[in-house]
Image (tube, rainbow, N blue to C red; front, top):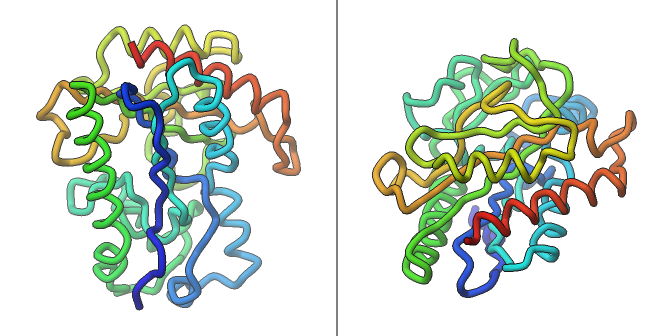
Length: 265
């Protein structure tokens, strides 16, 4: 079954902006035929989506893009990460395979069955993961050609309490976790992020989540591609019912706009 439209949006920014705001996990949408391969009942699936979705991060990115002095480009996943997770390695390099959460998840955040044993992940990888990766690679290539560099700012959120799937969740859970890469995150970008989110309650680097997303064509090879992950603790902008706080969203969008401005040069 082919899809009538891409599973992602690329929203243009300023022609001279090197920045791409990448929003991979904000959607809850699952195509009907993909839903058929998930063993959870509807109620359990909604609970899992509550745990796994980086709710409203697309809104934070959109508001930041509007407020930034140089409008960044935005690459936004239109489908849930329960379809495919575009940020995983598609092969044995992915450490999250240990808990059934590679490019296609077979286990839930609580390490319960999501898809049946022996599920063939290849059709979903070919249908969704590969086109997404190719399009993101092309977006980075376009910024390199236009500006001579690219800066990927990866926008996520995470729960205040550790979930069972987390392999490295024993450390601090700051209001804003800044994920870095030793090759793709220069010191000036690290410090720009720290300054930008200083007013949001505090930042720490690479705890409880580390690293950031870079398309494989450039990963570890091209230093013109900078990258940094912003993980926002959800209680900064969501209430106990999961509804967004306007003040929290606005403050975070303003902080992200500041980081975009510094990363734009």
